[in-house]
Image 1 (cartoon, one colour):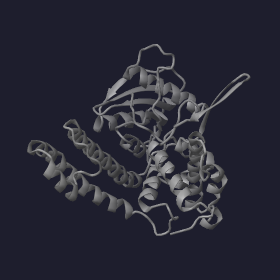
Image 2 (tube, helix red, strand yellow):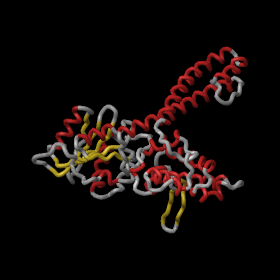
Image 3 (cartoon, one colour):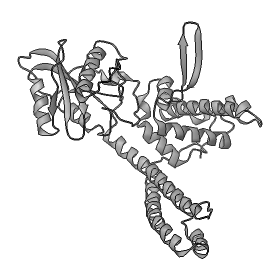
Image 4 (cartoon, helix red, strand yellow):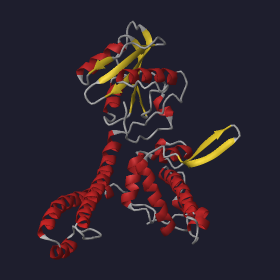
Length: 377
């Protein structure tokens, strides 16, 4: 299943391999036909396309299963034929509800990052072939090939609910910005160049005296929608800020701190700094073969929302906390006038990556703000 959404890859695969046994309370097979059943699931809103594999045998023909009771009957039938049931599906717009439901039934589930499943480039890509390729990769993964796919961490329902608040706020802010731009474009097309929040009371009063009536009528349609969005945006901002704790570094506002934390989900999910950097997508790429070695731009393989929040926070750190250890490392570039713009961008990316690591160390109690050179609000 193809999708354009961005997915967070969980580098700590140990959370998905705990004992590799059936969850207590799941149905047990009295006379199992095999040790394990592997299921490759291509999920859609209306139905599921599932390909099954018994132990090390070949894949079976795909089946179309509908969510709800038909899926529950299908899963329970698998437990009458095998000791363990494994399933794999790509993360996508349908969320993590399927994974949680399968886990509740006793299935060991792997949610993976969306990927190109037509690895040979044959130009044949259907629900059937995708499900078959998924179960094939699951077989290789369980055999020890941890590069068969990238496992995605399934957030808890509470983490998803908190993240939805901050994401909805950002979506509404961008929608308001888009409507403002549409109004400015309409006025510019009629020879009136306007800057700023033209829909606000003071600016609208000035426009009412200089624009023709028909143009004001068209703009008023945008204005009513913008005002409604702005009211909801204020409420969502208050809800996000309410999630913030008391202690925070100077320059790290509660809104940005909560938004970044919600994107991470839980700082304790990481085991080392490399896993933190991988989630941000701020790590440098490399192309190396034989005697050739080339450093590339950042991979952007991670959470894009978290990435731009960290870049914003890095610039704030330079302004409000120039004494901290991370800024001191790059001050010869960031705080020196006349430095080339490319060098400044490279330095701020490195600072943002280090900031993510410092936030992880602070949130998990590995260091104190004083050890990082932070001033707290």
